[in-house]
Length: 246
Image (cartoon, rainbow, N blue to C red; front, side, top):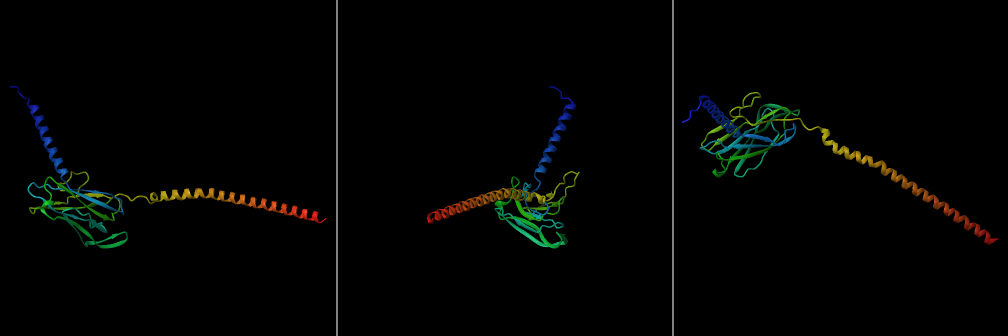
């Protein structure tokens, strides 16, 4: 029976361990709740879509609660209907007043909760669901908007996705879904098509004026020629009449 070199065994063991750790890491990362913003420009509104997997092997996900930001609150929030789930938006007083666009805000939407209406729509560990809200206005550019989530299971257990991600550090165990706002589109970008249309219209005006002037001049010369012809005809008739009398 051939002998296996000890170094070969160590390399094989290290490779197996690395593969196992990678598979665990990928599995954990893929199971995280994520948020995808449709737009991120400051001052605008956006659709936020949450992708929610269910991780428990023994229980199903029955409820999802999204806590909305209170330091940079949304002025309005609407929930997209999901078949087999009810949605509830809770509004209330903020922990402390904040200033938004020069106005003091003391109340705002605080949370959105989706609840499965029956066991058939609860999520097993082989399923996921997407939940969406339409929210605005988004805070100034460069703001990290955190949206902590509470995931409730049918056995009463709860998982809180509320750990902030820190740049330069490993991803936390239960990261809170988040996104960063960007600068608003330049005002001139929306004005370019209108400006181009106005320029094109202005460019056609001189040509129209020249055409009108040429037409007017043509009519004037035609009228003058007709007048001269009429005068000549009248003079000829007068001359003929005098000859007849004489």
